[in-house]
Length: 79
Image (tube, rainbow, N blue to C red):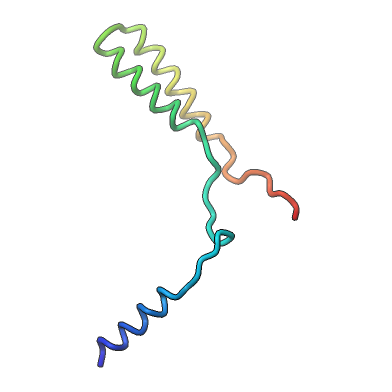
């Protein structure tokens, strides 16, 4: 008897319809790509040249700060 109740509850949750308006995702950002590029420059610089490490560290720092201060919620458009 308990199994049939569990099956009914799981069936009810599957029938829930989610519309695109119900899904809220953060806005697209280019900062993670730049951050990854900076980390790559640091790793490559460790094997090749100290100057690349310094440049990579600057790129990584700028990308991390840019990503942190990026607004989470863009301006809402009036409908």
